[in-house]
Image (tube, rainbow, N blue to C red; front, top):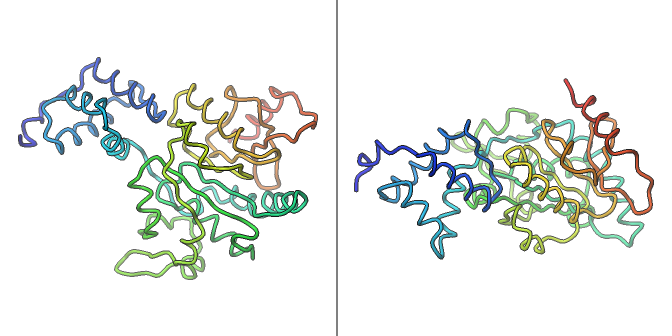
Length: 304
């Protein structure tokens, strides 16, 4: 079959609902009616690559036994992976200047060990590598002071992250001296230094697959920035509950500036730092403010 024979394929209403539900159940991604054209275009690309005759045939393939590899290909097609180094820098500065020093003191009081940080939904690696570089700049010792984990549902993005090769677009918020110190330019691409690459443990992980969360132990900090905006409300609540379970008491959750726990969870305190707002899992026995008052205050603070 040639690619041309599929040029007139259109996604029916029933097929759109079937694919949207499959993606919601398998990885939490939400595709509403406004996203129909984007989903159709990306599905069609995969249908053509496989030489299939219809969207229904592709849906059957995805549901067939042993189709996990193909589901991975589809997820690579439909996920958005827009990111860059030092994105939302103010929040990263708060992490390095306030959250990590406090967490290190807490770990030492409980017997020692590094502060554990998880970048959930790390895409091509810019976020965890940004944290690694800033930690080195602050004089923190890898393994002794901090340990970095990063996960993503896309195996293709994880391969790019492990390679550590980036183009100019990834450096739109990067100070020149940091790029000069940690990257080597070659043929218009920038290669991250091996010592920095070794600081991050990358894991293939689906945030809605709670059974596989046992791969990760307790965390002191979770960054999940600009990820849950792609989930429906039910999936957002499930993922936030998982983060609450994985965070140690007193641990911090950092969401993107466009994201909030309002109407999703009251299990976290909204904490105001010098540079930014973050969420914190309360310590046992600590009196908590009224969660709705906290949420309203956060909404006012987050408004432009």
